[in-house]
Amino acid sequence: MAKKRNVDAPLSDINVTPMADVMLVLLIIFMITTPLLQKGITVNLPRTKNAIEMPGADKRDALVVGIDRTMRLYLGAKSYDMANLKERIIEKKEVENPDLVYLKSDQAVPYSKIVEIVEMLRDCGFERMGLLTEQKGGKKK
Amino acid sequence: MGMAVGGGKGGPKSDINITPYIDILLVLLIIFMVITPFTPHGLEVRIPEKLPDNVTQDVLSHFTGIVVTIKSDGSILVNKDPVNMESLGQRLLSIYSTRSDKTLFVRGDKDAFYGDVAKVIDIAKGAGVEEIGLMTEFENQ
Image (tube, rainbow over all chains, first blue to last red; front, side):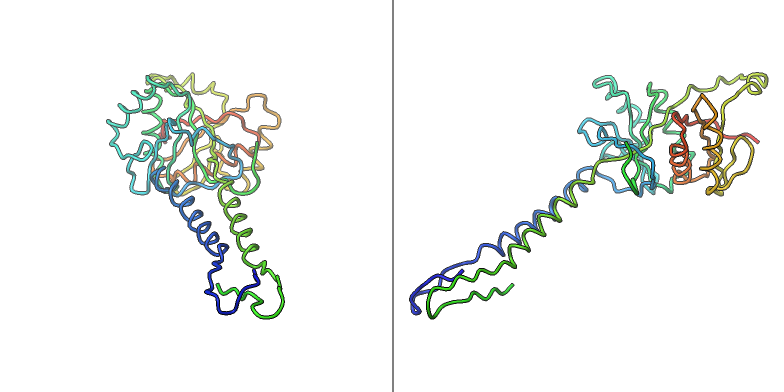
């Protein structure tokens, strides 16, 4: 951006463009890290090709039961043991009555744990479950 | 990033370096490429009613549903026939193309991995199965 100026005058044209660039890069970094921190646990989800979109799992009041590799149970981002988890779920069901509960479980969790959770959810009155996965390949539906 | 701005002596020259602008454009592009695919995906399953404890052999023998069992070593049985993971899709496709009741029951060993079970459910969804019921009873053989 050349301006006609006196050679001896103090130079003061600051390029804004690189600063905007740095700002956008910082923005990207925060846009990626913050959701990962909020939604709590990072879990190795099973990879699927035929999963459908479940935007309901992202909603703030969604019931997302999490199981990580160490078999710790979570509701959202907080860890609970089985008894407290059941209580919390019953509470939430009475207040909001969602009809679908989501399971965000690590691939390596043994199926017996899953069955425990499914039976508990059945006792809470749920008939449908969404198993959250990582969709690979083309989107479906 | 060094930007050599041309001009200083001589007449007014206005060569604008467009490199920083392309840079910002690419950064914005990256932002949108990263943000958009993050909708959660999942597999929807049903939680069937608990089998009553005193279910008789007679009732069991009249069961016409199809049960896929995933064993702890990852091997798969379709109603007692061993099938391997690759041919499972084909097998289910051929079974369900002529069936009106597109329901499949899924059962796993206590030590089977959730990842294997999820993979089977994924294959089933791709083979035309509509409803998947997660059984909570373990195979008692």
